[in-house]
Amino acid sequence: MGKIAAVNVTNDIYALNARRILNYSCFLGLPTDLPKGYAEEMLKGTRDLLKSLGADISGGHTIQNPWPLLGGSVSAIEKTAHLIFKRGIKASDRLLLTKPLGIHPVMAADRAKNSDIAWLKNFDLTRIERAVSIATKIMTTSNKPIPDVIHAGKFFSHIHAMTDITGFGFKGHLEEMLLNTDLGARITHLPAIAYALELDDLFCYGLSEGESAEIAGPMLIAVDPSIWSDFTSMLDSFGVWWIEIGQIEKDLQGVKFDDKITYHEIEEY
Image (tube, rainbow, N blue to C red; front, side):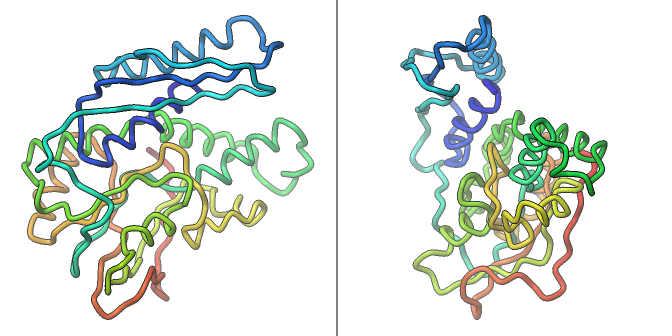
């Protein structure tokens, strides 16, 4: 939980192409009957993840709460010319994601499995466990390598827009990127954690339509076609998972899922 919280918070900084974290203020809400050691382990997870990013907890605030809460706020410093925003997308940009989707239905299945197995009587529990393992790795993997790649390759002016996918889901965040433009996005491929699409048939979060919420999710990046090969090759060299999902078109409005869209079930991450 501590690692997931730290990744989710700091990814907001990396989505702006900033890298140097100045401050991480931690927020912790605790029930009075929380077993001894839980809060310490949660904070340790946060600190371990932050230290891997060259940062640490600078301070924060703790309250009593009926259930555990963990999060924080983060600040960073970066040259203005190096910042990349959510807006700025251009016609012919190619779109890529850096993690598969499906956290919401997978973790819902994990909670259901632990509370009432009858919910999942028609599902393969072994495949659910595998999906949870992939989801956990996704949520504890920082997006920091993406700004590292952009800085190393000096791609500042060729990455036209960028955001991380969290609570509004893939479609919601992409719609934000397209806001107040005369452009649309044609989606031809969508990656999902293996078994997540089938689980979503039970939980109905809208994963196949890109509406399912994510936690500590992927970066969605609009890339100038002229540097596509150089940029993706460098992502590979930095060990970043990625997949091309579509492109930006002039004569299109909003987010359009192509009639022949391919859904990729990701077995390894």
